[in-house]
Each structure stands twice: as C-alpha cells, then as structure tokens.
Amino acid sequence: MALKRIILIGLSLIVLVACQPQSTSTLLPKSLVPTAAELVAPAQLPETPIPASTLEYPPTSTVFPKANPTHPPTWTPFATRSTSTPAVMGVFKFAADVDPLTGLKVADPEILNRRPVMVKVTNFPSDARPQAGLSKADVVFEYYIGEFMNRFLAVFYGKDAEKAGPIRSGRLVDAQLVNMYGGLLVYGSADVKVDGVLIQTLGERAISFLEAPCPAVCGTDTHASTVFTNTAELTRFAKKDAINDSRPDLSGMIFDARVPQSDQMAVKIAVQYVKFYRGEWEYDPDTHLYLRWIDDDSIKVPPVMVPLKDRLNDKQLAFSNLVLIFANYTEFAPTLHEIDIWKNTTGERAIFFRDGVMTEGTWRSVGYDRPIQFFNHYGIPYALKPGNTWIVIVGNSSKFEQPASGQWELRFDLP
Image (cartoon, rainbow, N blue to C red):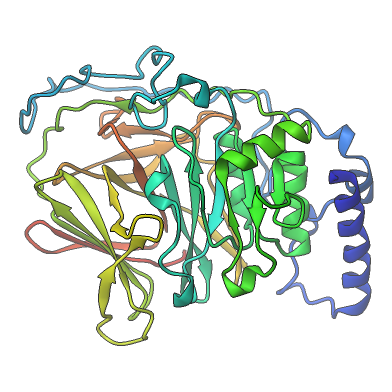
C-alpha cells in the first residue's frame, strides 16, 4: 500500500516540477522535498523521524534538557473541592487502567494497548460544522493553516468515536505532532510535497482516506466535507494491514484534581484570527468545564458567536483544560506553514486555563517521540485537570490581553 503511494508521489513530483514555473516563493525548500531514493525505498527510513524543517535540527544524540526549577514555591490550593481522584498522577507511572492523556480511568484497559488515532478535522467552510466526534477526543490541537483559517487535529485514545470528521488535508506540523504521540494519522490528502514529508516521518502510519476503505474511512470527497472515520475501525484496519500498532510511551503529562493557586480569574477566553474568524471558551461553574463557541462564518464584524456542538450527541463541546502554546510559524506560501514543535527544547510561553483560573508557564519538546510537556514558571511540571485538553498553537507574535476582569483575548499573528 505505502510503496505504491510513494511511487505515485514521486511521479507527481516529476510532473509538478516539469509543468509548473519554478518560483522559490511558492515551492517548498529542497530540504522538505523527498529524494528519489527516499521515495522508492521506504524500507530504508531511519528509526528517528526526518525533520520537516529548513533549519539545522539537533542530531538524534541530542540530550533534551530537563526542567530546572529555581526556588520553587510551596503549593497552596486556590480552591478545595472533594474528589476521589489521587492528588497527582503521572509523576512516576500511570495505573494500567488510566489514560495517560487524560488522567482518567477507562472502562476497558485493553483500549490503551494500541496507538492513538489522530484525525484531521476541518473547520471551514461552515457546512463542515458541527463536526463529529470531538467531544470524545482526549486532546484536540488547533492551529493556523493560512488564509485566516484554522484546523483541528483530534487525538482519540481512551475513547473511540463511531464517526469523526469531516476529514481534510494534512499539514507539515502533523508529522511532528503525530510522531510525538505515537499516533496513526488519518487525513484526506495533502500537497504532494507535504505528503512526502508525512510519509518520510510516519511511514505507513500516515493513512490517507484513499487507503483505508469503509468502515474505517467512509466517503469520497473531502472538499465536500463528507468523509469521516470510525476510530475503532481504523485501529482494526491498521492491525489487519500489518501496520505497527504497538502501544507507545505517552508519559509526560501530569494531572491533579486540585485547582492551582492563581489570582487570575478566567471565565471567558477568545482566540481571534481576523476581524470575523473567532473562537471563544466560556467557563461553566456548574460543570467546571470550558464550553466552546465559534463564529457563524458570516464574515460579520463583530462576529456572531454560536455554540460549537458535536453532531454525534448535539451537545456543546466542553473541555477540562484550554492551553495556548506559543510557537514560531514559517510561511512558505499562503496555505503552507511549518511550525517549530520539535525544536522547542528549552521552553516557549504557555498559558493554562482550568477551573476558572489562568496561570502562565512554558511548554517544551523532550523528544521526537514523546508528548509535549508543560511547566509552570518555576520549571516544575504543570498539572492539568483530569479530563480532555484543547491546545491552540499560536504564533509567537500573537498579542495576549485582558480586556476585562476574568476575560482574556488572544489575537493571532505570525512572526
């Protein structure tokens, strides 16, 4: 399956180079384009991923730095609520029946003996909404894809979704994120050069909608927002197709049911891409979760906000944690960007929202194949609230402001 696909990509590259004008402003740098040998010989892929970056990347022998706390404070809870959840989980090792991406027990521990299924989910145009399955994801990544639009990468591990999507195309950053979480990437298609990077990094774990037949992936036209995956069936497809589906090491996230100390309330958070593309989160004090709102795609100023629901249950998306992580975006073309995830080994800014409060810290990569880790401003691992997490990757030039007490506004911007 993968060999035929890689050969087709190689032929497409030859045609693309021969037929299109060679504008350096619209083509990827040569370092991102697979060589002929790499395209026809996937068995020779190195054990470590091939970085999708134009800058010099640390060698595989690089020792990733650990947190270096200085004068850590004595922890004091901001609020106290009775809970049967252990105080801190993930410091040493999770129990066999605890999902390391949520800190929650799963009904059947056997579901954790696999790779996460990571699904590319579209957010534009508006007829793609409401999306399916996002309420069942452990983690959802949101990032900018160009032309004022965002897209989601949903991670399904502790739960499956009978329908997740609509599925759309892959992006360069998916190679990094999917490898860090040891996942199977399910995507619609990709620019031929981006597809080459995904295959170089992930091998057969990069599964396009054309490769996995129904019931694993159903639908024929991703641009019509009609292609969806069944995450349990996708796992079965991987096993049947002899794709390595062994359980990855997903340690690194820390969970604590106690509310962190903070004097900054956070009852409303907004991420604005332009004047009319906006996402909001509102804290629900009854459930202690953040509810997701989205613009109605009417290009009105100010935008009209509506609940973002899951079409599987018609309920508004609710998440335990919202995290904004700042990263460097490199723009090769209006809809082609690289985001520095692997390169952040020393710590970039992160902003955490949980239980109605805001705290600041950092995030960093500790390996090619290890999940993102979070730290407070003292360098101590930051504990998320047990439950699901929504992570927005924002440009380093983005502005973060507080227009009113308890309200926070981030205006997205590229470097």
